Structure formats: C-alpha cells, structure tokens
Amino acid sequence: MKCPYCNQEIADGSVTCPLCGRELTGAQPADPAAAPEVMDSAQQPAGAPEAADSAQQQPAAGPETPDQAVVTAAGMETPGAGQQASPAGKKKWVLPAAAAAVVAVGVGAYAMMNAKDPKDVVVDAFKSITAEGQTDPAEEIFGLSAMMEKINTSPSEIRLELALEDTSIADLSALATGSFNMEVWNDPGNQQMRMDMGIGYGGMDLATLAFYLDDVQMAAAIPELSTKVFTLNYTEDLEGQLEKSPYLGAILKESGTDLNGFAEYMAQCSEMASSGEQLFDIEALWNRYKEGSQAIDDLKEAMTVEKAQARDYTIDGETVSCKGYEVQLTKDALIQFVNTSKDFFLADETLKSDFIEYMSLAMKLENSMTEMTGVDVLQTPEELQAETWEEAETAINDLIAQLDSTMGDLALTVWVQKDGRMAGFEYETTAAVDGESVRLFGEAYFQGGYSMLANCGVSLNIEDPSGQVVTLGLDKTGEYEPESVWTNGLVGTLASGDEVYSFDYSDSYQIADGTYELTLDFLSSDVSQLLITSSGAFSDVVKGESMALTMDSIRVESEPLFGAGNYLDLSCIYAVGPLEGTVEMPEGEPLDILAASEADYDAVLTEMTGNLFGLMMNLY
Image 1 (tube, rainbow, N blue to C red):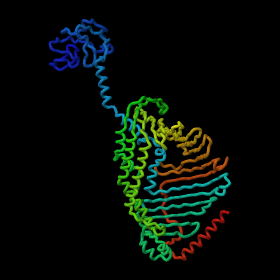
Image 2: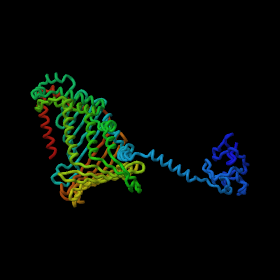
Image 3: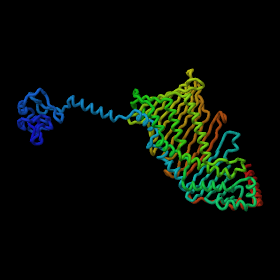
C-alpha cells in the first residue's frame, strides 16, 4: 500500500507511516498526483508544469491539528493540516533545530566518551620523541645496525689507517709521515680471529704486531723483528706442557702463575663468541624494564594534568596551533620513581647472571696471575655480585636522600600536536645548593623534519638567589633528501654573564657521489679555540654489509695550543666488509713458548736486537 500523505510504498496494514510519521487510521487514500512533491524541479519529468494550484497539491482532508509542519523521517518539511505546500520545485531538505540539537548532543557525548585521558596524551607525547618507525638516514643509506650485527656474527674484516701527513709545528715535524694501522679478520663460525697492529714512517712499516687466536691455540709475531711465530696450545694438557717446559714453565712456576686459569678463560671466551652470547644487553634490559617495572605507571598515576592555553609552533615550516597541558610532579613522586626503578634493576635476574658470568671470566684470568700480582682472590663471583649490589643500593639510597633534601616539585607545560606528537615543553623546579634555593628552568622544542630529533633544541637555566643565570643550550638541525643530500648541524652553548663558551658542528653528505665535508669549532666568546675540518668520500657502500670511508684531509688548528697559523694535517681510512679469503696464522717459523729452551730464547733476543738496530738506522 501507499501512504496517503507522502505517497511512498509502505507495508500493508500499517497504522503509522514509517516514513512521514503520520497516523493512517481513518485516512482516505490520496490521488498519487495530489501527493506532496518530493522532487525538486531538476528531477521533474519533462513536460511537468512548473507550479500547480496549492489546493490541488494538498493531501486528502484529515483531522485538523495545531502542527504547522510535520517532519518526515528523511528530514523533509511536509505540509501539515491547513498549511499549503510550497510551489513544486521550490521544496528544501531542512534539518530542524530539534534534530540538530540531538545530533550535536550525540556528537559531543561520543567525543567525550572517546576523548583521551590528558595523562595519556602527555605520556604519549614524550614517547613520540623516540618512537620507533622514524626515518634514520644512517640506516637508510648505510644500514649500520645490520652491518654491525653482521660484523659480529659473520666472517668480516675491518681496516683502519691513520697518518700524520704534514704539520707546521716544529716540535712535531719529526712525526710527519708517521702512521698507525690496524686490520682485524674475524670468522666466528670457525672460531678464528687475527689482528695486526703496526706503525710506519715515510712509507715504511717499522713494526707490526700480529696476533692470532682460534679454538685451540694462540699465536703472536713481530715480523720486522723476528722470523719466529710464538705459539701456545691452551687446550691440550696445559698442565702437562708446563711440567715439561724447560725454560718458561720453570719461570711461571716460580712466579706462581697458573696458566690453567688462563686456558679456562680463553676456552669460555671462544665458546661465547661462537654462540653469539651477549653479556649486558642494554636494549633487552630496557625492554624488560618498560614491560616489568611499575615505575613509569606509578609516576603517571601520581602526576596531575590540566589543560593550558594553546600555543603556536613552527613545525615543518608551517605555523601549527598545539594544545597545552599543565603537568605537576611532586618531589615525592619523583623520588618514588627512582626508588622503584632501583628496585627493578637490582632484582633483575638476567643482569645478575650477566655480572656473575663476567666476573667468573675475569677471575679465571686473574687466578692465573694471583701469585705474580700478590692479590688473593677470596670471593666467588656470586659473593662479589651480592656485595656489589649491596654497595650500589647504598649509593643510590644516599643519592635519593640527597635529592629529598635538595630538590623541589617539578612543573611542566607541554604542547602537543594534533597527531599526538610532542611540539615542545617548558619546565621549572628548584634545588637547594649550599643552603640556598636555586631555580632551574628551561624548554625544549621539536620543529619537524625527517624525525622528531632532526630539528630540535633544549635549554637549561640555573638561576641563583642573586638573579645570576647560567645557561646551557643545545640546538640541532638536519635535512635529508633521499638519493640527494643529508646535512646536520649541532650548536652547544654555555653562557654565564659575559662569558660564552660554545661549539659549532656541521656536516654535509652528498649521497650521489659519496663526498662529505664537516667542521667542528670550539669557541670562547666567538673566538675559535680549536678548529677541526675534514673532507673525503664514502665508497664501496653496500647497505647492511660494507663501506669504506676515506678522509683525505683532517686539519686541526688551535692558536692557544699550536700558535697562530699552525696546523696538523692528518688522513684516515676506515673500511668494513665481508671477509675475503680465510683467517690465516702469521707467517714465520713456529716457536712453542712452553717447549722452547733457554737457548731458543737467547737466539730470539739476539735476532730482535739486531733487527731493531737496523730499523733505527733507517730513520736517519
């Protein structure tokens, strides 16, 4: 059936129209042509009259009501009894004031029910500063984390070369062309490692110390001084080797040195290296703290947060209005936070276990040297851990007592962006120093960029009772355009009255060709005290695997240290990447240090003395 008032299809037998809301009891069917128009003029069929007599547009007569308009379910204004309809094509869809009020109340109630607790807003804003997922150019360009992990777990090699190329300083001119180099080859899977360290001059290798270690033996050599490679098998009946040793064994016995402790130490280090075990994993400890400690939750519960005036910040080059929050943290709440944190760390079983294992290793090495050093090892690792923890707790409790007697409540005003990220905050507290109240205040700001810490700053002001202020500040800038450029700037200041000390650092890395430039200047009242500049290039960059950094020029200038116009010019090469080839023993004739006789040692000493004299002659 059709409603006689709105001419819409409804269920047969309906008592009330679900669309227009009119009662249908006793209503007379209406001529469809006379039903209220629900189309505007643009929807009318072609040829329809623009207007009709208002009497023809009224529905069949019904009982007169005081209503002047009836609101349909669709929100359309429909003529009531005794009211003429508007001309065809002129009707409007209108939301009555009552309905608008209901919607407004509903929206407001929904917003209130879903509004975030101001404490959560403030806490989340602080978390946003170091939140995961932010752009890290070092990771995007070099993959440093993956590279470092690969170095520790996969076959790798590292090379470092540092040379003094030139200097205008007379006292150091003799060292010009001097160099230091180091190479490390590491194969954790095969438990092999070799490290060579050397010094050079004028392009010559003056001396190189080569050290080799695997799961059975260790070896050392100085090829410029001796043709021998000194070896020690520390896993095969070391006690029996010492008993049979004709020369060194007797000396070690007389000194009380026990190489068995050393052997155990080396065996355990080798086992840890091959298994990838890591002692004192700080990141894992911090995660356990966040998940298992109540300190942060208690601090959040104790703080009070109220709304404050909004404030405009310049973020990513645009003016942004940010909501403000007044935060109060009492001294007692802060001290409780320190206390709860202390209790967690001192009770952490993994931290205890790591300490005990570390001390066990150290003691095994120390036990082999006990008689030689005259130190008696009287404690077990477990006893030492318990004593260390007790001393730490006492020291922290003393610090807490000092804080209780000197610090005041902390007041912050925090401004938060619409997306919940921190825009900036101001803080203020007091401290008692030598019986006088000192005011501490400052602010921090975050101006956007590729991460929260790309462009930011923080300051601390210390004001004494006389009004004198000491200011410390740190401001960072950064820009990153993938595949193009990465730049950074960092300025630090320490100001007290007319005295201002500062440093100014900047660098620029051109990603396309790998070149870089950097400057670091230490100043006093805007006068340079120490200036370091460098330029060079990165090459052979394979993200997460390898890179080579060539610092062609590192110039150091300092008038206070070297005199006006004087300088040092250095160069440096640092390279890291996968191991090429295998880890090899140093070349030379093996000499077992325990099996060698006194005559063998005398021959080595004679050889080294002659070669050393020859090296010294080459320097003149």
